[in-house]
Image (tube, rainbow over all chains, first blue to last red; front, side):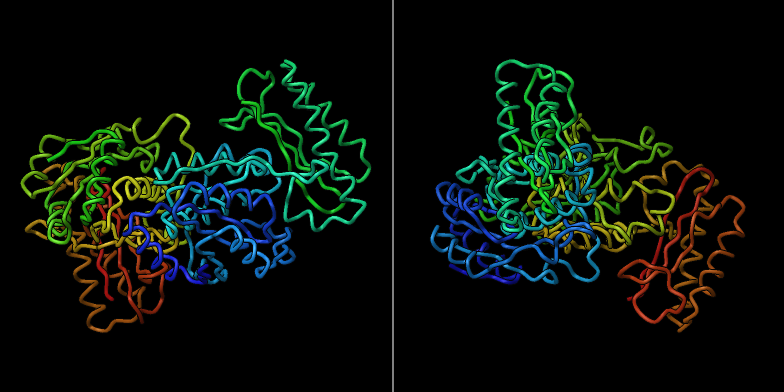
Length: 280
Length: 280
């Protein structure tokens, strides 16, 4: 497995692979890889000749009061996991390699970025779109793999690719969960044992909401209230948002009569967790 | 010469050309082609196996009070010119082909977009970066050609390409002028015969400014004042801006001690014209 720290190195390898007619799958990550990332990598491994994983904690998608400095990192463990899955190249740049001092460019998607996580994280999706655009150009991938856990991110990246005519296919992969249902996340490591136990409330509440929708409930407010009530019953939980939006423009819906995303962001103690389900 | 109206058509041809290992040069234009565009196309013709010209009046780079509706168009004449130069493909989409009703993405470059034309045209360069990003992805060009007449645009597109790691080389080409020195522009066609005669003041004033800089004048304010005074002496002229900025970040300079851009935007009657020189 190649470990590349510079953009030039990656581009050099990519040039050779493209010349050989090889297909390339990209898995963009912020490292501290878990089974969720592994599932993306395995999917990429099946569908492409070459698999590139980027392992980069992207500073420009963190707000000033967010957890950039403390975001968990373990590059050695990441390398082992990637090697085990048969990744061809892991790209692990320094922030200065990605962002020159006179870096001034940005990419974004309006409307879809404004609600849900965008409300409390106003610069987040601009940072995501910008770094993802860079990675798409660097890796010249045929396919890129994103987890549905970040459903808003997945919708935004898909729209960006469609709108800007990127030559890449975006593959969304299902949420991977712990045995008790908690969605896998690098941030789960922040949770104390007690918080970890209580964090399962997100999935429990969403499962109830999903059942209501699948049973034919059309009133979004009713579903939202049931999910909110279940989460609020947990004293360690503080809701950032609980919302049902249409699974295209990500705008709040009153009546459920098309594909929807139900998404929640909840602080368990000081740790902000997200989870969701989609009904197509 | 292939005339393509859809993105899919262009991508289909590009796929074949890429497979054959051919190099592609792109000349993005808004049509109503003149000798300035022709010089870009000829340069592209020399340096690439395939030349693609896009001919598209990009609505999102025009402000609400600007000349989108009246911008001159003559696609038949454009085709003749392109054919004569040996262009392989001319891409002439409808706005709806480029911008779906739920188009929400944008690309931009801050700092460089804020001064000069950006002051009076706040959305202009976002519109340029967005359409150019699309065209770069559609044409998968190895090189793209831009005229130095739009010096700020050239600097912004170059920065965008560097920052976002586009796999394309940006080639800047010199300003092409009428016999009397007026920079060629599709908008010159708006000028009445009297205005046309007076419009030469831009080049005359800039030539004087350039002489001062080349003679060693370091005081930017002095050069700006000389150029302003010459333009203001023409009753038909109304200055939008006259500025000297550094030819990297496009920020105003007091002392000329590195590469600079001197740029002007001047209304002659109701027609806004731009011109500039660079001293590297």
